[in-house]
Image 1 (spheres, helix red, strand yellow):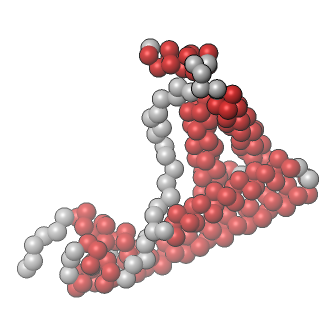
Image 2 (cartoon, one colour):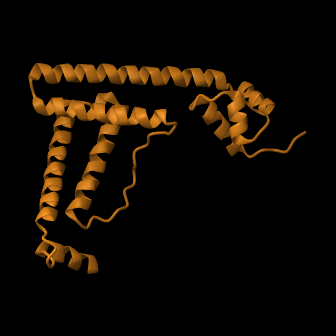
Image 3 (cartoon, helix red, strand yellow):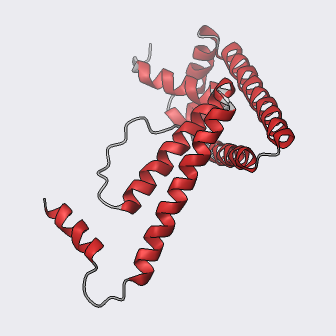
Length: 193
């Protein structure tokens, strides 16, 4: 009998087969175990059935998301509200980013623990943009969260971010390079505290 493998190897193999849809042969090569071992795991742990259930669930999730987006877009068009249409476009952009990321063979995960210090307006704008992106991701994962209030909140936050970025760009453009502006001095003093 061969050496006993850590359970993590089997879990990794299962994930590669069921989620990444790799062939059993490719999984065996990737995790470094014999093809017959991977075949046995697939049979014993029901990987084929699990893979089919996951594929069906993913298809259903995508279909529900498409239907929710279409319904929401139709409501925005019927209402004639540019803000709602903008928010729908933002949702579509995040959906496209997610699809590109997953096509590249990666899992799209939202950051849940932000651990960055905010010292400047630019830092704040970036942090807010990350928060809006996380909110959009949650809405994409659960279309029941998509409603006009949520879209309006995202639109308002996007406008605030745009204003912050515009102000920051203007501040940088007006900096002549001759000395330190009062804003920059304040930031430097804050950094030294």
